[in-house]
Length: 411
Ligand SMILES: Nc1ncnc2c1ncn2[C@@H]1O[C@H](COP(=O)(O)OP(=O)(O)OP(=O)(O)O)[C@@H](O)[C@H]1O
Ligand SMILES: [Mg+2]
Image 1: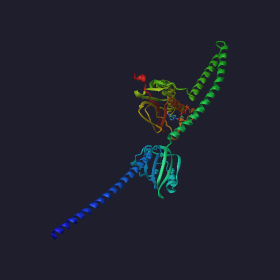
Image 2 (image 1 turned 45 degrees about the vertical axis):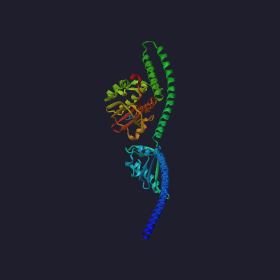
Image 3 (image 1 turned 180 degrees about the vertical axis):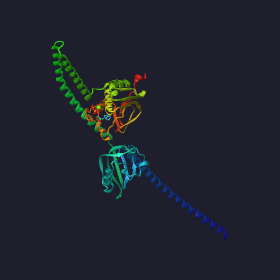
Image 4 (image 1 turned 60 degrees about the horizontal axis):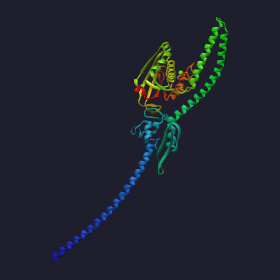
């Protein structure tokens, strides 16, 4: 009996333990449930935070302004896409480098460092040059902000924007201004001089008619009339130069245009011991332009090249089709590019900006109008003119014309 009782007691104990275990499992399940809920809530919050983070990151990355952050020692910690693109760097080349590395002028950099990192003050500059990965100068406007975590300064944000277009625009406006004034001046002047010239010419013609045949004065009066015609022609040219007529573009063969300019210069080239070499790629031969205006551009460039080579040399002309090209730092679509290159004395780097200004000349007999007229005519024909020069080695002028498909040529 007692054995039977013991067995029953054991059974009850087991049942009790089972009941205990079961209630513990319930507890555990409850706990697991609350943990899972907490975890899900955390996950939800994390996702929301991540969205906010991605949103802000997207804004910072895609801002057209460049953003660079540094630690308080001036070491670069972050660059957004615009900054990397503008400076032609990759993250791995530049992260960790001192910010100073990017400024073109070390004295300026020292001043900025002092203000920003030592005095922990803001800095703003309307125009300053950065140096890109290839060493090219990029003018920018920038401002700085300190960012802090609690009361400690964590680092500095440099926000900047590329101001190359602004500068070019300003420069162009300056040129246009001077050209417009010059145009008005020339128009007024030509008018004032042509009127009395017309009077002198008419009087001379009357005088000529009144002379009896064989009169020795006939030749003198004829000479006067000739000189008046020449002066009139000169005035007309100057007038056309300063205020060019609207271009009448059409498809023309570059070879023919170059030939007609070459004919004008052949004897001078020979006399000055200057060779002329040209290579035209087939695709670039048909250009869409006002041929007379383009002749003027080429003539001015050739004359300048000849002046730059007083002891002889060589003018090389090359035309090709470039699918995409960079102009003043900007990527442009395809173009016909015509280069006129000489191996003359070149242009000092500090003077190169001036050569397109009206009346800038280094020649005793120069007017300083040739290149400003070229720029203007290229502008009128939707083209562009660029120069590269090495002092003592030579100069290359590049003429960019938009590539216009010649439909007639294709059919
Ligand atoms: N190929 C070149 N090589 C060296 N210097 C050049 C060249 N082309 C232009 N220059 C410089 O640019 C200046 C301006 O040229 P631009 O053609 O406008 O005027 P210019 O030749 O002096 O006078 P002009 O009005 O008679 O043409 C020149 O005086 C010269 O210093
Ligand atoms: Mg000239």
